[in-house]
Length: 317
Length: 222
Figure 1: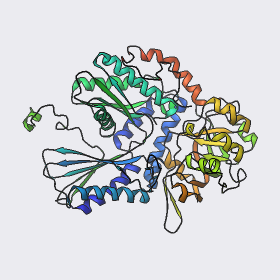
Figure 2: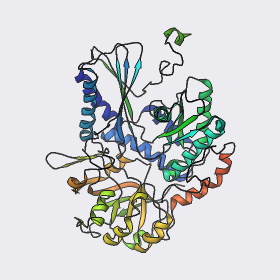
Figure 3: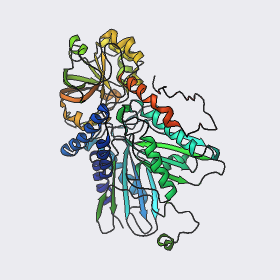
Figure 4: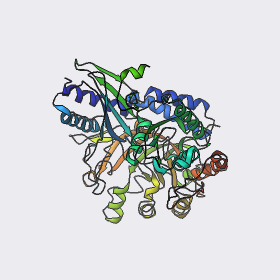
């Protein structure tokens, strides 16, 4: 049994870490980009961002004043048990979100869509989102918080098989050029692409591809991995950099996730995880141990399984 | 070439503003206030009295709401500061500028050159963009003090009017000048020249959408 106090306290710590500490994989990616950047203004912007991450860590203040919309992903191993059950877990995550909003502090971004009611704590109807995944082995729980910016850089389109890779590239470029102008997407970003599924799951796949995979990771399907490389390079050949200034770096990495879709369609979504790619992860064990990390490691072989039955032996074969 | 750095008052003279060039990096000293949807609606549509002497106290309008909280004892805890996209406020800015004498409009992404020519230039105002976006911690360091938070009970913390005393707060980038030239449009034009080549080997979607364009010099704002 994993104690509910441990969950709430860990969740509170994760909120701080996500808001303040840029994940190392993104930082490495941005430092590499800064070395290649030769646009005057773009270079200045990237250097200012690198200084900003340092300032945030030194002062323990949020790296960006728009602290995004905090959300949670909960990954449970099959034998994990939560003290008080799953509703207690959801309450603990809502409490941690509200406490951190006043404690870090974060910007209380969440309001009612029509009445603009603001509880000043980032909690409300459907907020924070809490999504779940499961793994066949173990008794641990992974808590993952992501504070993604909420306004620009995302799009969805129903493509069809006849659109092909050329159609995928067109929609990808359209999204980058449209939202990259004036830097609305806060690039260079981790671009996540969802292909297939249904309309809603296509959006979910693309969002998870941007926020739950790290810079440098590659899809386990080698042909998709090659497409990730190709699209990353294509995005960086636009000639647009940070803030939409002339530059070479628009895409820190491009991650693609797929789901089986209707035989007539090829749904596509594009998401941008911005210069403040805020994510933090902890694995909690029944004996009270907590291991912090920044790689959500969400897309395991189990999450990408294709067959009816799950046979762990297939993983090693 | 490294951009030029300028330290500017939040109540700048006409000469100070005339000396700014597109792409200059600016650091601000003095009082600034935040204003987004809620403030414009309350002050302009609701005709509420603006609780500051403008522009004598401040001519710097910041499209922002900070990551901040009001403690139980009434003091403020302000961490990071980042701008929000300005194009959404174009509807209110001409009246706001006429009423308050704002000369520095600070935000994310700039406005169109049409906005600059129509009401920035006649008011002797320029646009300063935040950098990144998201140098929230650096800008937070430039906050010497939170002097007041107006209308937070009516509008909530994120929409309230925060009055901030800045000490070398920055960096900001000069994104318009007194000719009404727009830095972002200048950059867009350079990038657009390359786009036909980048789009080679792609194909428009078989199912079109209303309002679709293949003119890649188009912008989404405005």
